[in-house]
Length: 67
Image (tube, rainbow, N blue to C red; front, top):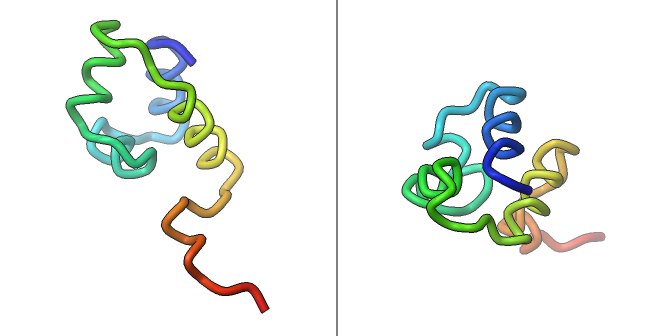
């Protein structure tokens, strides 16, 4: 995932930077830095975006026991 991919992801899902940060489990500052190409986007953010796009539960949802 690169800066353009991240911006397209936000637009597709109509997320502002704050909502995107919450959905991906990172800070708003990280989103801003990644979109401005100040920092490289970690691989796990691409995975988190893919999980979000496919309506998979967040890592926080894994604490629920499966019956």
